[in-house]
Amino acid sequence: MTSKNILYIKNMVCNRCIKVVKEELEKLGVTIKRISLGEVETEQPLENLPINKINHILKENGFELIEDKKAKIVERIKSFIIKTIYEHESLINKNLKFSSLIENELELDYNYLSSLFSSQESITIEQYIILQKIERAKELLKYGELTLSEIAYKLGYSSVQHLSNQFKKITGFTASQFKSLTENMRKPLDKIS
Image 1 (cartoon, rainbow, N blue to C red):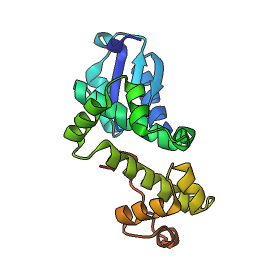
Image 2 (image 1 turned 90 degrees about the horizontal axis):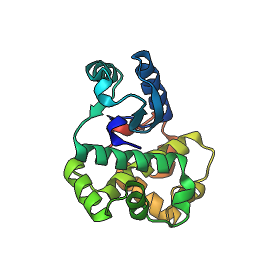
Image 3 (image 1 turned 90 degrees about the vertical axis):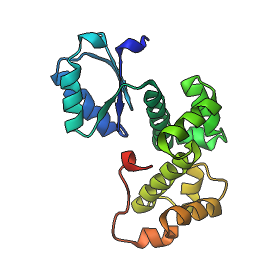
């Protein structure tokens, strides 16, 4: 895969985002080879694409082209974390460390990735992971289909108490208080930082 045919896009955080980006790019005549969170591989070389039009249509839909190499790496880390927490819980439950998963996914040293992420985002990768897990826990609590114990297991917590402590620290509520609230307090995934 040649990186010259890859567009890196900020704020792609869910399957609906992928659908919107795919539809909008196809309207502009872009032939998509592969699309995932934060990345679109095109058949055409990037220099043959209407980049200004692409940038405009992406911004209209809440997305943004990323051109800086370091920003691209950070966006790949964020996309991988979100995808793992929301779609590949089995990786979390195998007691695999996120640091190893991220290092393997990006094929770069984790210490470098951690330092880069912190300098770009003003929080650590670990803090970002916790924030994403708490957002996922909020979502699962609102659905009401799983017990707190099942949610803790699903998100890779060592115990219900560990999840409960982090939940209270981040949200200011216990899990049961949050569940009883009628107001939806979830944040869009791209606004977590």
